[in-house]
Length: 270
Image (cartoon, rainbow, N blue to C red; front, side, top):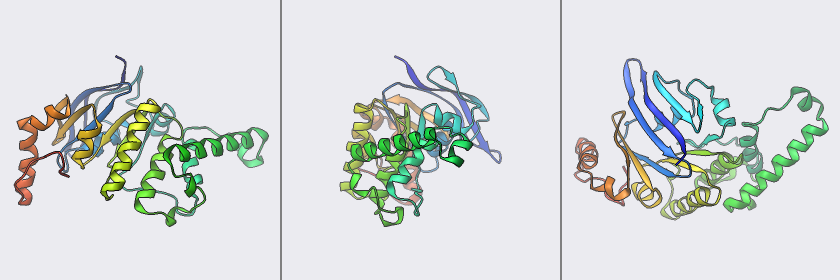
């Protein structure tokens, strides 16, 4: 099976503190992979390394057949890696449609003369961007929000717009950083259904970092577990991960530090 993403001995440190320590794993193309771990275990750092927001201190990252270890962030995006963030960052002065179109502009190179003089080629690309963005909003089921401004949306709607912006360019790999954060149970179910459709209908490889463990366990085929910057479990099924005593101890240790005495059951958030 073709690997969409391969990490080989990836490490990164900040001020002498090792945030990721010799992380190696492989995500097959088309898989829906979950990444879990206690707070501060390095999950978001891992996504930042994959998307090239952070440079690695050691190791290598491959996207399909390409070594992207030293690529700039924009080149990785143009090569098919898009992502969302823990904190939604829409441009409030723009409409929902315009916010989604930004996802296309991030993966395309526009000649400066075409932009300045609004050439026929530029106008054609803009029409295509509008059409593709409207199709994406329809796919997600929020086309009725197209003309609203970013600051007129609820938190759940903003999450959906951010996902629309990430998939409008039809990425090969989608990195989701806590898409269920702060959402109601109903909204979490909507996010789960949407992620399944993105993975199944669009054929996008999805890597999901999430604290809502029930969401990860119900969605993901395979799960990786990060603890203190190291992969405790490189790839396990949901049942294998839940029954692994090392995983339970990792969560229990953090729970004891917070004064709680339970581990990562299917419905817990951690």
